[in-house]
Amino acid sequence: LRGRPEVKAAWLFRDLEPEHPVTHYVFILKIAGPDTGLLQDFRIITNSIRPEGVRAAVTLLDPNNTELVKVTSAHTPFYAAPDYPAPGPLRDEGPGKA
Image (tube, rainbow, N blue to C red; front, side):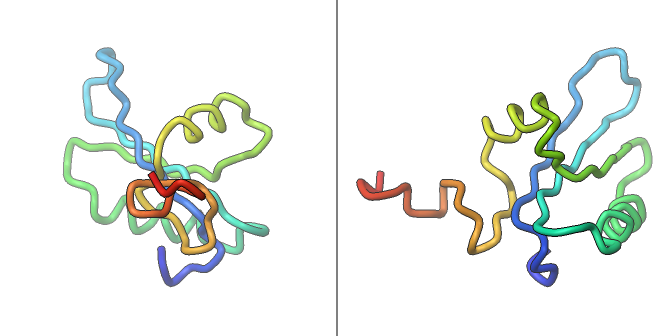
């Protein structure tokens, strides 16, 4: 992700719904600007490295999808670009520097 400057943040969630017979992960990517093939590239990579019995989906963070924005806002991304403004465990937390 570091080699793709359009990626600003990325989250990984595991679907814990008991009705799913396989493990299912969802990657959510926040990008700046239009998608120029990143989503397709990430889907190819994700599907080529996932173990058997595991499913993975990749989506872009749509700022109009209030539920997705709510979920991602409640969790620290596993990847954040240096210019991504969200606080996280490896960043200064602001003026008080918690």
